[in-house]
Image (cartoon, rainbow, N blue to C red; front, top):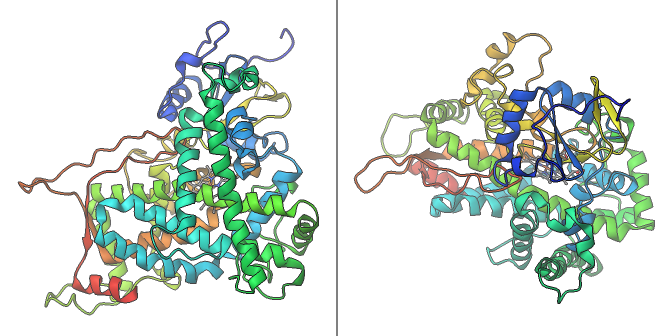
Length: 539
Ligand code: HEM
């Protein structure tokens, strides 16, 4: 202690318990934001003996989580979530090492940029029923997003097409995602047993051990969720009726000659083990195919099962959060909706709205080929990611050895959080950061910027370094398509009460990890009869 540099600054800890009283179970990012303003780029707090470190600037997150990724990529060992509830094999919980690297390679194989265009057809197929469900029961928009995100992932990962709301896999998956997000991870996922590990040895009959009984039930459910869709693919392969999917491809890899996954992977970029961020590592080379073959021979069942399941679990709440923020932004900023619709109408053709009005409207749904001609819609998407900040404190990375950064000591075992919220709300990076303003992403505005200042929210909102989100490329396409399809066909406005007075949407943020707006009232309806016809006709 005499020779090492000081810890990074932070609120004063109390003896023994440290800063536990400073921690909030809801919207911890707001508290961490205040600390960032008071203490600067790096903040340190302590809960009992556990150090938590918040990195509050782009420089700090890139210097540590990216450039020193070899020591900043482990995950906390959570006894409740990981060991007792069986989530330790999920990608987001896997300790850094061979298994994590194998899982990430498999995920890159499924969702790397070279593969995504092969899903465009599936996205288009799934987005049309989404629009029709939305106009049929607009108030349940979060349910419809859940169904869309779940349906798309089940199709891509397991080759299973969801045909109804009571689909058994969808129901099982929803139950498990609910257990994971709202039970196991409630309160940030830290349970008393994580702080006092000896509690796990108490017998089940002992008072106060209901967490152990719950954990047994939840673990059984999680295992069912991992095994059933996987066994389904295996039996489909046996019958010869399996649709090409992530799982079927990996199971059949040695004998496959054609599938959406096994050809023309771009081998030009590096892998994350070579020290670059995963955005740059996300394609799959022939070397990676070798890795996949190793997995088939070694613990392939285990790895494929859990990787497939992890992708499903990770895609739901994030997609719901992002799209809910988009809807909220449209409700609150009608001029943005109008400008985006005008841009779409210009590109997607105009032939009147079928009601005799002279207004020109889109007469087809957008496709990926239209994207380059829709800069304002792209700006709306980018601003939605910045303004919404779906995972405001990212997920914690565990530091595997003591480190020194700018004269500060960061202890081994620290849980390190990229404070995405503080970066997305930094007035030095974004003028009036609270304001939803897509114009800031248009070419003119960007050219005025200081050279080299990297402000694209995509560099932040998907996390950092070797644990950066492997779903980014999927999101880039699937969320863009949903946003533009909604803009082209729907009016999204404030709801009105029985006297015709507009109702301001009121949102709360109750989730500890995701910044998911609570459901809010709004008015979503087809822009015109033509738009309604488009939605229904396409379905
Ligand atoms: C807008 C939507 C999404 C956002 C904002 C988002 C954001 C994030 C963030 C912040 C992390 C933590 C990264 C870190 O630890 O530094 C993460 C991890 C992860 N995400 Fe996403 N995500 C989204 C969608 C998806 C989708 C669609 C998938 C799957 C298809 C996915 C799969 C994962 C997985 C498996 C991890 C754990 C990676 C690891 O620890 O190695 N995400 N995501």
